Image 1 (cartoon, rainbow, N blue to C red):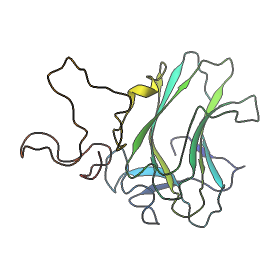
Image 2 (cartoon, one colour):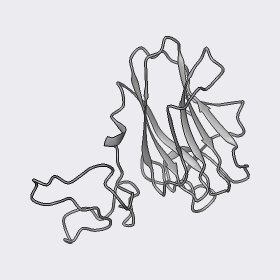
Image 3 (tube, helix red, strand yellow):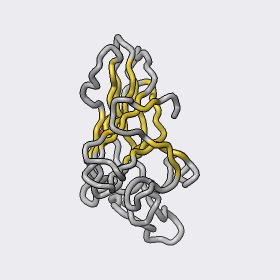
Length: 207
């Protein structure tokens, strides 16, 4: 578990897994690291759980002398998906405090990048990943490739998967340019150049 431990005060545990989760149409099909069913990830299984049940994963404690960036990938796919939160817990406090990153509801298939900045602290801290089950079994939540890098994270508006059908994540076309970028999925017009699939989900359906 990469020195992460299961919280003894939550409702259930995270699971180390590979391949498709037990319930279809929820959870990832492959891991993020290798993009295959042979690679591993951690996930919170929703089947047999009640709405609001939470699973927490806690890191070892460490000193944070300089600001850092928590970098990870998450899967939140399923019609009844709940919430994923990341906390930075001061070990001198019994409270988790407010999450430094949180997201709720169905985000579609595939893996997405999460970023959360951590300011320097006078006390040792722990990272806590918390998955909260939604109102049904289609609520599996997974994480993979957690990494902490020195320095603050890039600004959120610079991160975009272009999966939304409307809009360009705040990007606009330069009117002085000769032509515009196109929001697209699947193969490009020409048969040889360009991608055949998107990067986010590795399919022709996504944008």
